[in-house]
Image (cartoon, rainbow, N blue to C red; front, top):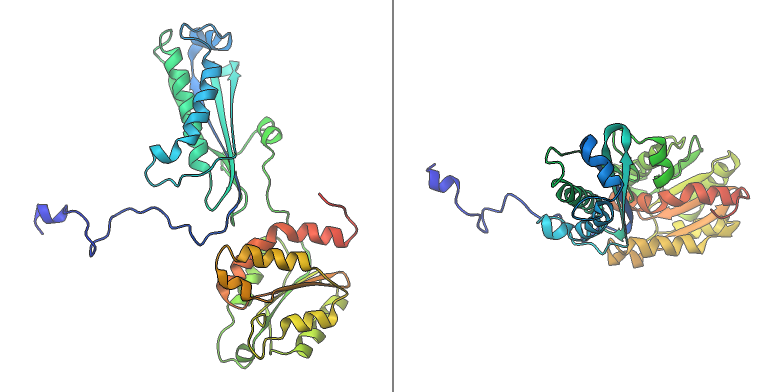
Length: 341
């Protein structure tokens, strides 16, 4: 291959080596991220920054303003970064006398289909560069370092903490929130499918729900496969409630087909219907696909057990687990007499 051919421009048959991530089918969720970094100012400049006595003016105030502007301009600075309508930007400059350093935090939050890590990092960098700019007339030997994401939360991944961790003051100030776990809560997963029960195809949606529950810490055996119909499922749900199972996720049988009877089975054994959760599930699922409005998803209470009827595809099961996971622990607490959080 010639040198010129090796570097020819991409065409329709030769796609570019980069692309903006397609997030159209992702669901908008609450997102938050905090980034941190430090300006190492040195013994001479540090007291001037803290005392707000630098020749160019108050560096701490100006850094906070620059951080706000930097976070909002992240998508203009980084070509593949999605523009986001930020709902919160907070910049903090914390003097650390032991190191003659200014520790800068940038917190960003919004409700969107993608996270705000880059916005937080852009804000922290802009604030640090502004501190550098205002301080260099009195001390050219400055250094910026330790820039990293402290944590992010939201989306299907929930809370992520940087491996270097957080100190107690950072935890108290930002209070990172994770999805409440189902620590050792007994759960079950039931797949409703005539074909899967006859062994004509391998059940994929049931195992996906089992994995989701186990990630929350639940105690759940492998998924059971039952044929479609009211009585096989209704009888099994009564038995599970009697065994002390607290959450049962059913997958399949919620469509408009002639054999789809999962909602009818749930209603047959329900002590209470929980219509709000069913409607919330449909509404959130519709952010992935408009076909969600054809689902007859159902949620009921059988004794102290919550039962959810979810669609039958593996993809819908995984999306359903992401939608329900933040609510499950609190819903159980309410069943047990707890109040609203």
